[in-house]
Length: 144
Image 1 (cartoon, rainbow, N blue to C red):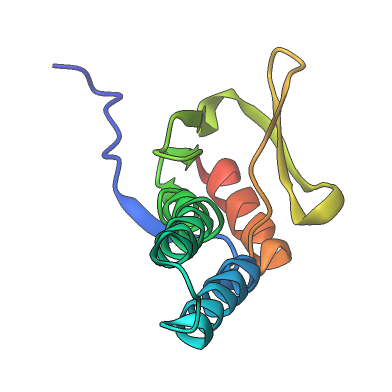
Image 2 (image 1 turned 180 degrees about the vertical axis):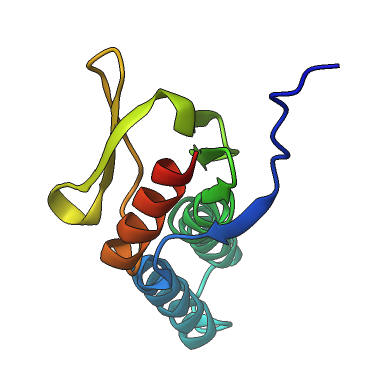
């Protein structure tokens, strides 16, 4: 057995700020208001069908897709690595092992930047309380 095995445990799961969902919920409220206001006020039946279809499409594209994108984006901080998933269904993935990190810093727009040994830079998405997270990540990288 290897003597260099380090147990990897999840310390935290971080999500982006929920203020990103303000505009999608505002669009959903506006679509609901328009549908409820024009309900049975339009003269032709096809107009009601068109109203429901347009409101459903607006709700799908401008509310449901952003909410699914928000819910599938997170950053997991482990004792040995950091894992970031983003995208509509979590397709974009960034994984950084602490053994490859030479430095951790705060970039533009509250983005956390990892300087890797090969000269590359890996960026995490903007997170709340990024300054505190950078100091904690620097401690984790220094301990490993």
